[in-house]
Length: 109
Image (cartoon, rainbow, N blue to C red; front, side, top):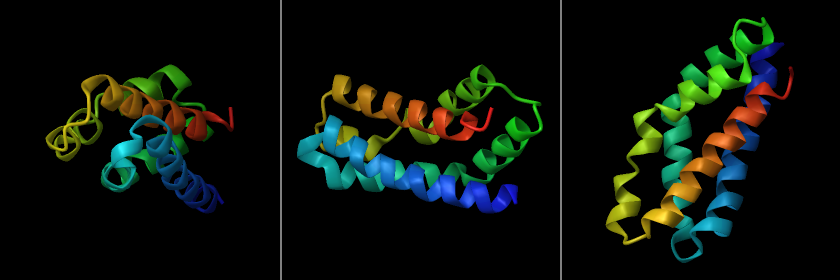
C-alpha cells in the first residue's frame, strides 16, 4: 500500500514541478520542468525510502527537508544556469521543489 501511495505522490510531484516552473521561471518553464522532473526521477528511490521511513515514524519533516536539500540533483541544475536564468529565480524554483516534495512526503504525518 505504501508503494501505491508513493507512486501517486510521485506523479503529483512531477505535475507540481511543471506548475512551479511556470510560476517561477516563466521564460524557461519547459526546460525547468524537464530539469526538475529529471531531478525527481534521479531521487525517486531515495524519496520512496524516505516516504516509507516517514510512514513508520522514523523520519520527521525536518529530517526529510535536510535530506532533500542536500541532493546534488537539486543543487546543480546546470542546464538552467546555462540558459541564463537569474540565480534568484533558480533558487526560488529549487526551494519550491524542496518544499513541494517535503510537504507531499510528510503529508501523512
